[in-house]
Length: 347
Image (tube, rainbow, N blue to C red):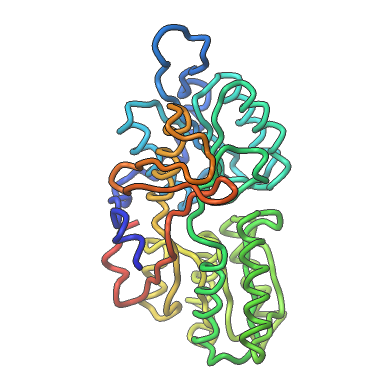
């Protein structure tokens, strides 16, 4: 199954503006249209606020651009706001502002599973629907979670990729995002279990955190190689981290000697695939993920679904989706990018 081709393939997000990260701050005060029942008469216009982990992150530029396109196709108002640095405290202030504006829905990639919970529930009490995507909160704090792929599938494809590249033997490390990132920690726990059960000759010697910051991730990569001179591979399950690690390795004497894989976007990783630094990496289509989150938010706002298991809704050209256990909707399976196919994708 190839979810990207199956669900609308590439949405042309290379043409969608990276300037969302710059314009989001100005939209914070004016982009959201109040949508509470107090507006009276006909239902108010759909208004959806996307709050990524941090602004200026190419992954969220892409996913939120997909959300913007979907919201506007539904006749709604879209805005993107968020902190410059990935932190739960930074997200809370934007959640509170959106709640005060009585927006129809919030779409949030959580920097912490609990720390933003009270703010989200306060927004929900005011009538705002809450959809998490990419990184979840505890279920009690949201109406739906849009999952990019199953944690098991993502962990397995990354472990299989790195172990194959290093001959299923030797030392590896993980370069993650923030230490509290819900999705990252779930994947890492599953990777550890897979390694222990199926790859006895592969040793995970370190897990480090680049906080989804390019320079920090670059520096952490350098430190890993200095601390572990026998390192044979790095898994980076974060688009910022894998690109920073690729940039470091591509100009170091470890190029071609230390394998690198994880989750990245084709536009970020194209150079490193073509120059031999990276053989293969993985992802879903982030624009599809953002679009699916937007359609789910719209269905919640309209009352087409409530978030209970078994609910179904249509997400434009992506097709029909069903709500699973724990109010979760699954986009699809991860996709492998390599030298043979990377030029087919422009996001």
